[in-house]
Length: 291
Image 1: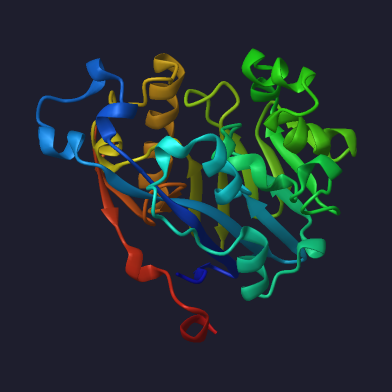
Image 2: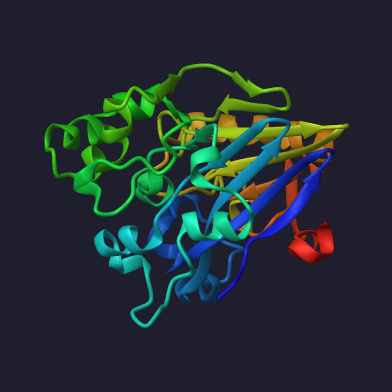
């Protein structure tokens, strides 16, 4: 078991919460034609472990959760991504409690995209009761994801994952649909980043000249950073490559930290046309170290 860890971005405290480890082969998720010949087959064909991370941002009076997952609930519907003997980490609510964050105090919930591992934690079990995990928070989702047929069609079924999670949030009047860049609070901005999904968005955190980007599923592995044409099989290639190019230029210009949902924290370095990913897990500190 692990506990949440933190990094400071200027005056902003960012808490990284691993909800559980996914396991899959890169070959099973990457578009075959996008895989560079230089990538060794062993890397593609061996099951690898990927964290499934949520984030809490403390910025002034704002208490912000990014990508509220529920690993146990997700595993029920997508067991192919979870090792059979795997024991998940404590729930998002429990890990937030460990970090000193009560669910009733959360002011904003930012959803990078509507894939189940990023969103099903917006409600509490038993979900049929419609209990909202963060009842005082505005929830922000890309409008293009909400409008997507793969979301709208299941919403017609009251017992679907979609209806029991984001549908319940919408019924409570807590859902905001985002179509363009939006400042959530000073220093925290949602930026459209389509490609992984139609309404995929990333979160920029900026304070005292320092930056960190929560990039959702823009990348799953370093080979996608270092090979701009490499991407998941479900991506829309043109907007995805445009998003990656735009992000790399911003990250290099700002020497920004990057946190993808399934990768260690790190930085992009090198040149815009030949970016490299430098993992820096040592930047994350336990509570006793950072306080």
